[in-house]
Length: 157
Image 1 (cartoon, rainbow, N blue to C red):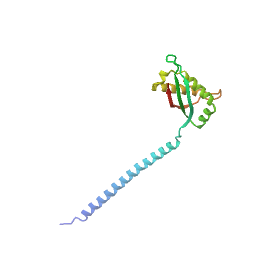
Image 2: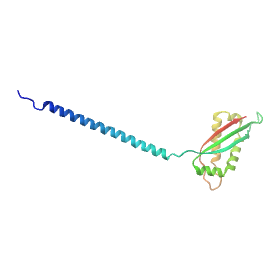
Image 3: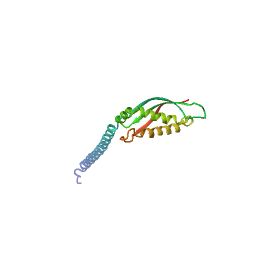
Image 4: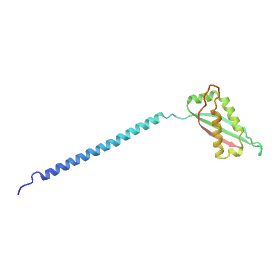
């Protein structure tokens, strides 16, 4: 009988080559996945680096009489903080603070107590304040862009 020369050796070599090829394929797949994660984390890092911290301007609290003839004299005590675009906008508003306060007083004193007690009423008031303060203070000034009007104190009496 003739001996099969190298039968088990060939099988062993074929298995070793298959194991090496599958290991190389797995390593390439892992490298691709990790490389994509690195690219995504770099994009996220760039986005985080580009985002600016919020800029706020706190306005001293107001106490105003409300326009409510049915229930006698009603008062509103409120503290307001404005979230603005950037430091330049904050500085501009600080320079024009007497005008800012005057506009706020006129808006606040025209409100009715019943409307201000609901969350919708507060949201409507914030929207009205935003519109009123977005109007330019000077002729050559572009419209202001306020990000948000925040109530830090709010008491209707």
